[in-house]
Image (cartoon, rainbow, N blue to C red; front, top):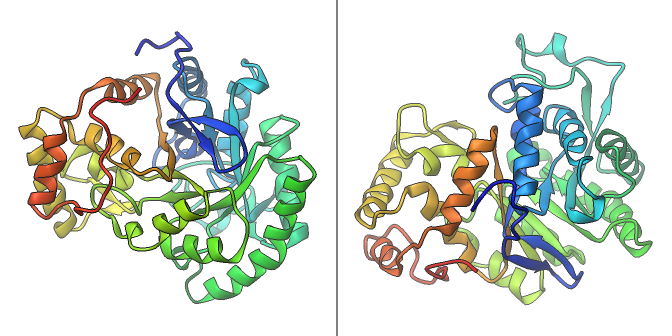
Length: 353
């Protein structure tokens, strides 16, 4: 697929909203300087490459570099008509620009895992008023009049530990009420959650009326436990899944090379070994492991889009090229036979159209 062509990618609909998104979306966490600092011009070029190559879904969060990702994403997207893309961001944190986190963090680290970002102090707040404040700040950083998708962010054990239950109640009593109101007033088209845990996604799905959910890292070639109950529930309730973390933080993109990441940390030996076995089967079918990792989730009918981060136009081109490659059905059958993939996982077609 040629960059600069505005060639449409295949699209899927978000729940009952009528909102259509490309099956590959752009995740802006790297623009917040996740792991490494980035050049401003390269960031802008990367976003432009994503849009001009046919991506219509752009996802962000105040968390990514304490607002830096939203700032950069909004600036780059201003070159395109607002109606030509779907904008998603998250709530649950708001920033105080008059307080700096820098003094409390190791040098050059603002948000955990981020090598840079804005020196603004982040505060968790899932209350009604806190969410409305978060939305207002995001609109300002993105420099837009409206956001299409709003997701309640990081209400999970991964983030809050023993406080997760209290945060869940706070989110349902505050954040959900705020987002439901914004949806009913037409200020936002779809609402959901953005989490790292399928179990907590399921808890939210049973507690409220959601259109979509961004699940990161829990449905991939390495992990398919979401098939147990969450993905069937999502299909039953017409909740569309925006799937992040298809590379499980990197190991399914690079293979088990030294320094490969899993769940934002160095991959442990057992994950490296499993990824190595997966990669060997992929190589036997002349398929890069990254291509298999991208394509596998799209076999499930609940998955509307996979959301991929990128730090350069070249990465955008490489990801898109993977979508044009034929992936033989025998690859999936061999992964199942080797016990590396569940036999009840829906298989993607050999080619996407």
